Image (cartoon, rainbow, N blue to C red; front, side, top):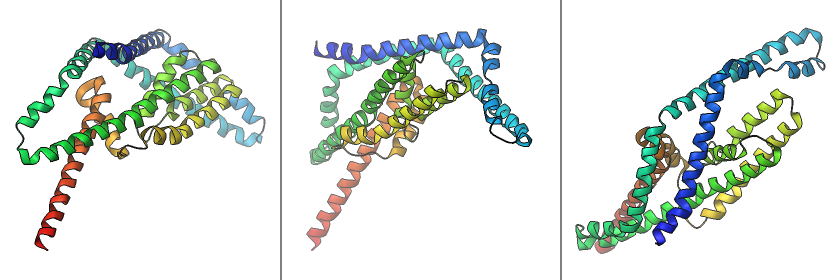
Length: 294
């Protein structure tokens, strides 16, 4: 019952958020397909160009128009690439749903019977290696807690704050934008800046300059808050090198699909813990041999 309640409290809300994200993705993809020309034609810096031209000499105005035209074409290309990716994602939804189904059942059975794995592994390990095995398990637990508190929980908090902020600022699909912000926060060296930067550009293009400046400042606040939230949550656990997590987030989806966003960092984190334990064990044995020699 406790495992079932844990799944209901933790896994089911995640699946609902995932389902909502898919729904919004399908909606946006459908809108983009049917109104592709209209959406792209609406992106224009004409108003911004006029404002800039009013403050610069006449001989420089042609350069301004050339720059804004280049920026418009760049944004159009990015939008085509972005929505094209989501269209391909929508096509793969049946396989994604199978992965989610497997995730739920594997989570349940591993939570219920996971302790048996330890006894089976311990049975085939020589007694003189039991201490090493115990140290390795402790290190793995510490690394997993560091990943959860330092990254997944931090991403959830940042995403929640972003959702509230986007909702107050009046953006459509505020929850969807908050989820994207939380996902970006999970990826090392990236953080939430892609989301609020795109919203800033969108507001500048549409002429909503006040909201654009506010969302930019709000985004800077989100980025700075990570410097406080992450150390506070994971301060007592081992600090994993960002490169390990970055490789996990990049390679995980390539190997395992969508679920690889979770499995990738976990597998590399566990590998890091095993290697670190082995290194410490070798150093301990080497020190003991030196003391015996002396």
